[in-house]
Image (cartoon, rainbow, N blue to C red):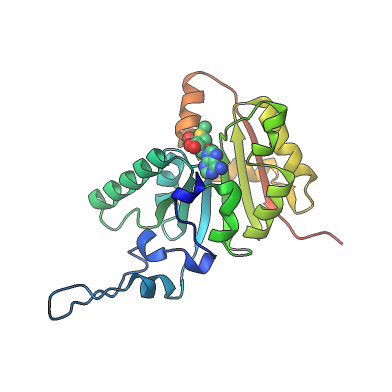
Length: 237
Ligand code: SAM
């Protein structure tokens, strides 16, 4: 259950030093006994000069994040994943990439959490530029629709977290879920569809299928995908 993983009580409590040590180096000193005097609380409470701007929600094995990391080398990004083993795998994957490519992959990290409950604990109002919901679990049965990661009430939270102009990317191979996500977004007053012309030149759109493990699987099986990409707007008068 959720009680097994720690949740920050507020965005200011997110441990940036442990996620992005390159951007938030801790000032480690040693006492006369050679013991570290580092106080992790100090590191945590240092002002966050650079904040997380991309969130891959239900990131799975992290393929998208790894591709985005080098495409947007100055943007901090995080994957949110509920499965413990999968989160550990992504952590190891990032650490290995940092090790073999000095200076690279410092802007990407992962956290184990239930995104349906805790998004506001991680991000302030208007903090995010991009949110990704890629090949989310379909929850076919009507009684399980409330467990879908895109819904009218969760979109209120995502709208709060996104900057005006920020973009929400969704993709699925389940047609019914694709329709559902598009409908929820289209009906929400704080989102508008990103025009086709813009999607064609957005390098991120290509990655939704090509860089995600799930997208690669669908492509191998010759499956179809359904895309909905929406922009956070302000309320019209
Ligand atoms: N986005 C990845 C991709 O395209 O390869 C993974 C897709 S996978 C089908 C869906 C992922 O969402 C799973 O790894 C699952 O554990 C995760 N997930 C489901 N519900 C979640 C929640 N409430 N919070 C965080 N992650 C969740």
